[in-house]
Image 1 (tube, one colour):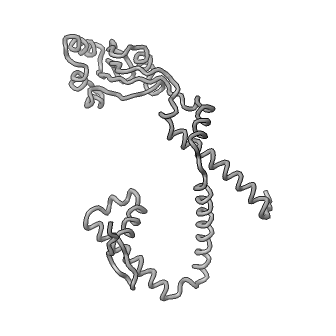
Image 2: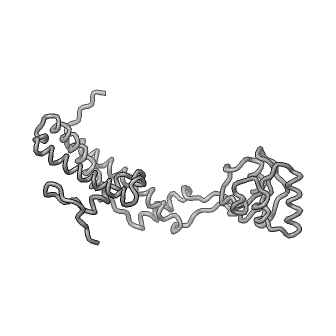
Image 3: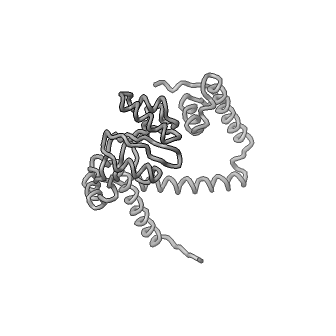
Length: 247
């Protein structure tokens, strides 16, 4: 793709890539500069950056003592970060290493018991029983949830998604984890009201397969390898350079 020139300031080109970098650096604030008007504002900002640079050079600011101090501090910090990045970029991990790490740490990747469920929430037990009668008479659970439930999940037919133990109030949890897939519960009272629960799927606790958690294993092991490289480098450099600690 052509890297279009957007402006020339004092002989220096401002290109489309400069605008993209500025947008990237703005992060979430980039949303405020959408459309043609926002684009013009950002180009104006890039032009101002170049004008300030030209002005600084003309006034010989780069030789001022304060600038040299700031520049040297920034240079030191940038060199530190660059050296760290180069060091970590050398870290390599084979699939054999990952598989070995996974086998030794399988318990980290256990998947807890989970359920998928829907519910209908109403204020009284009497109303809950009336709705249960409608469902028995042929009204689908999902349509009943959309029509009668007080919970925002009614928009999705009462669907609550997938969840594990400890994520719902005790009375709801005790009921749903004792149900069979496809079963609809009698009214369950909680602090929020009365729930009619439909269990969609019950997934027992299990160990995840290596392929299933490959990226998670890789990320975890990469952090460990980085720490090892960091520690090794530190030990090497302490022997090489003088270090005096006063505390």
